[in-house]
Image 1 (cartoon, one colour):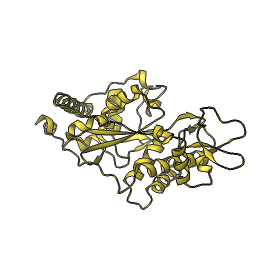
Image 2 (cartoon, one colour):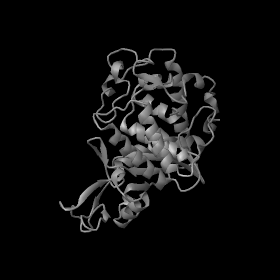
Image 3 (cartoon, one colour):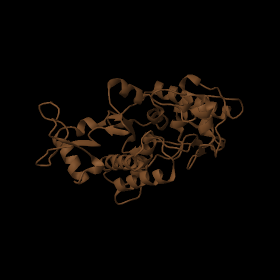
Image 4 (cartoon, helix red, strand yellow):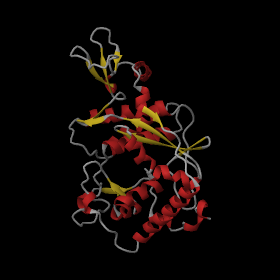
Length: 318
């Protein structure tokens, strides 16, 4: 998976050492649930395939066969099927036409977003959505790159539900079957919970089609709570200049990390929400190296590629 410029700057804000390791083209060999899902979804959105949903599912399964999976669950096949099923239905809902395409790279920027008419778009896979999460995503570098292109950025938020026992618990992954009719439901119209007569069903174990699943989600009114299209984030002239300057400084900092030892932000190594993938052995002042639990990033974007950047070529600063 390529390391794009927004991802690199996001990591720089967390820890200089983390950013320097990414810039060297390293990542942990084992993949987490969320990394599997992101890679499957991104592959499906960009794949030249008649069925992009299946392409995303196949990519998840390929990764599960070729890479170790970082999980406490013993049922690795069940986990792989769960993630593959989730990636498939997300892509099937999001992509209704041709493969999504990135904007052309700037002389000093490898984009993460995709082109739409009159702007750019990005996908945020989240466990829940709130006003606070909306503010957080609006200030993410994946959103701020819209300012570098002089275009508004539309955020497509996909709500996955909470993570319990190695699985996502939300309408995209779990429903309820009526014990006699077999009707698929997601919530009762009176707001009450389903009683013991209703049988829970995971989508990867559901006998119906993905079209049946989505139709049932629509009938229960949960589609509009699962796929949220946010108003485009626009940037005025002052914001555009400030964001471009921050991007310029960030890229310069990454280049500088190759000449001076990067600072470790040890308090973030074992963050409960987003632990650093280099925490072992980096937190103990040992160097992560290829062949010892780490591999080269596929289609990597390294500091060597930054070496030809012209930091004065950001359009908004010219």
